[in-house]
Length: 379
Image 1 (tube, rainbow, N blue to C red):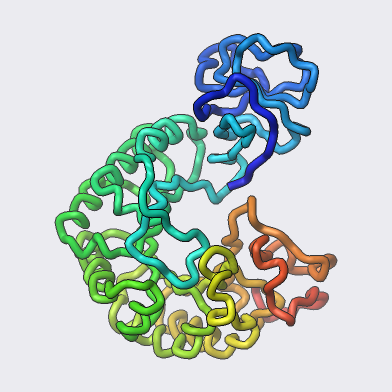
Image 2: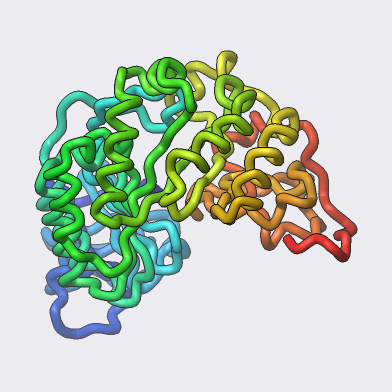
């Protein structure tokens, strides 16, 4: 999440609020005023954020930051007593998500966010957070950790989104293991959400390989979870993180998916984010994405030719073969998406996913600006 460091005053507990520049004179208690023209924290707001260093302390909560350029009307932030301003919702972003839990029952060797063992229940916080989202929000992710570890509170979150944001789509990122319990899968179906997709990672067509990568013997539970979700007509996506230990069997894996999971709505092949456990296991995982182009191309086209929907996430268009560039998506969250100097002047820059900020030092050696595009290629 995007974060700004400031200095907080009169803030003991975390304060969550919707950013405003003073447009609303009513219902201020859930809003945080951003203004550089205040001589003291404003009355009625949950807090004030300012770059004015001469604010008079009147015992109201406020935070002084270097500048306020990063804030937009409708953003939602948390301000804590360390002076951190954490953006938990950005109104201009298409990648907003709710962190259901940081706990997980897997320990994937390339996980960018290693799980924790214990934590305070995040559900009350998330229910309030959802109520602060803009009503025009197109999609919200529910992620973790592993979201199903919060049990029935997952369905509480979904129903609250339905109530507060009836037009908003939901994407749940889950390892799928809990859905091996048919009753739990049925509870999801009984939410009757109009636009919900469960995205489930699968890393091999070989059980032992998948289990080794996720650090748990759960391959067949994940498979059963997929079938239970399909039984209840839930929309499912598959996610495959491509690295040194998964790329060689991509074509065989694609064939396995076609024959065993023809019901999935999409299959996403994802370039690895080199942070967290992926950074710790870098030498065992890293391969230049250019070097698995043949396997990736074969897998993508195999699925596409058979009527399935393959996508490529987090990849740079200049590295991909031209005939599969059209499957690439702008998938990296705004707050951690960057471009390199080599991208300056590239004709595809506006369509390209760019790079994870954590991959700035670890990326393909074949990055180059594209100056000509073949007429028969749609990118």
